[in-house]
Length: 115
Image (tube, rainbow, N blue to C red; front, side, top):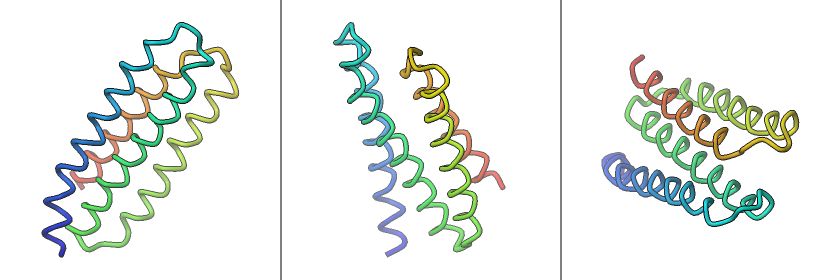
């Protein structure tokens, strides 16, 4: 079972990242920021799915439950970054913050795998 989840996760993670990238380009269809909000929300969903899938594989591969604590802390950090940015800069470009958080989550996964 562990082998199947590991092998399938490669394709799911690639699919999730491709969907996230597609959402990044689809946001440019609209000029008004209000019409882009649904796309930004879908980007956040794809970002959190990528992060969850990567940590699911890490937990299955290592068999260590301690990584769930890292996952929860990282999810809190990513979620609070997105929410605080929206509260502090309500007219800011959310595409930039979503891309920053996506790269940050990939960096978290890489650092977790290194340890």
